[in-house]
Length: 93
Image 1 (cartoon, one colour):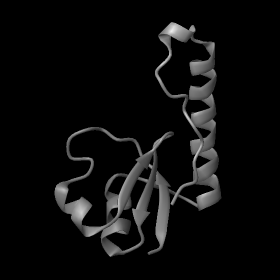
Image 2 (tube, rainbow, N blue to C red):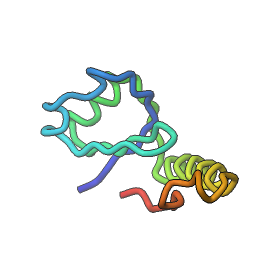
Image 3 (cartoon, rainbow, N blue to C red):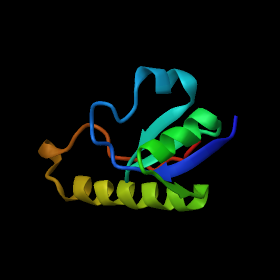
Image 4 (cartoon, rainbow, N blue to C red):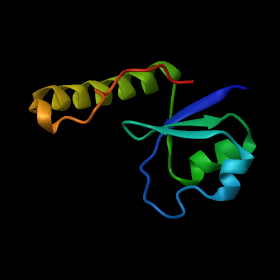
């Protein structure tokens, strides 16, 4: 399955619905990056939420920047204040 990438700000209830989740692949990532199934319903959702299309490399760069920011914040904490796992970079699907 091919994916489409976008940025969109999640405003809460109604940003995506149960039906959306059934009609197309959807996953959220740091930096307000969304990976959306590349079908008519997914493209309609991007338009409905005023998403901004991104190529995968640009979406990945946004996620990497956010993860690096969270890593630096984690590193700056005292050991007893850290969550058990340091944020890690990953590759978007």
